Image (cartoon, rainbow, N blue to C red; front, side, top):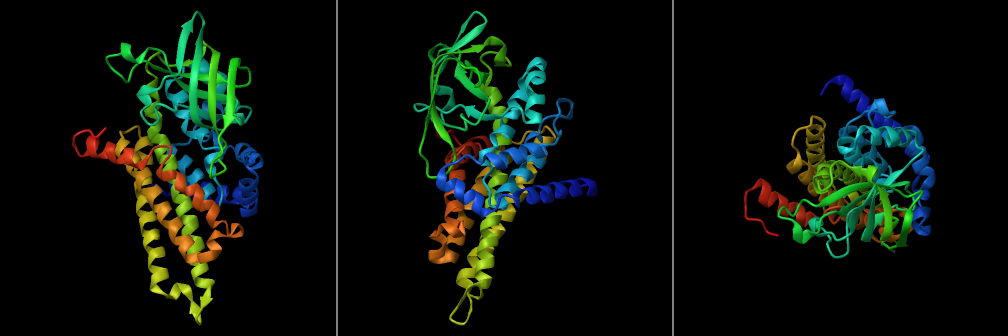
Length: 386
């Protein structure tokens, strides 16, 4: 890596850490307790320009790559925060950047870069389809210069905190298709001025994630808000998944490093039976092992991110990065809780909060079993298992 590039990335790390110091553990703890959206933090991050990292400079953004974006999200989680409050704006951006037309980019990207708009809602998952995205049922039927949308989505986060929603809907009935990956289309829905009935029903979760069930009842979307070609939406979404997996891996690595730092610090300071508990191999070795696994996952994260930024195929690397990082974070979370003993369950120590938050990464936004299925079939050439 060129020395100047390395220095630039270190500068990003230090700047994000400095920003996060204004939002200490107590800020995130109170938000978790009350269920409030971290509005002040997201506003500060937006004002800093970091949420516009992936927007090209010609549209007012920083013009950075997924590698730098991943560093931003890693540092938020490493500082004790939860970048889930804002990460969707980064990984949904690719669909608009790569497949939107110039008019759409000019209309939305500068406003997103200035912080005047938020694109935080990504509506794909449905109750009857789950991870089988090609079986979604929400319909978008063309009617003149608009599409009329009816259906239901679930686990759709930050709908009420967003101005725009990226929506995947069916434009051709499933039974009429030979290629089952066709017939789905992507739309950009302006949530500020919805025509029709859009009902948002919050879901109570074990983490402060602002997740909802969304019902579409004759919701109008202008035809000009179709992203790319009708029927190609599944391919566009897949195209964004590699970026999503890389960024989620970075968040998990940030969590893992937070856990490891807290565990090692506590093990050095906590004295029992006349010596620090970290002097005991039963305490020390699990922390060291979790650290080694985290560093290995981090190498895969950077390998995937740099391939993505060079426009190289990186599906295996992106999926492995997410798999390894989420497992390393969960290992570190358990080690940290074990090290703290009973204090790990006390809210004032923040371990239990981060413990709940990091558990999500092994399940969402893609379950690790599906990653294993992908690797087994597409990388190792074994028969398809699903």
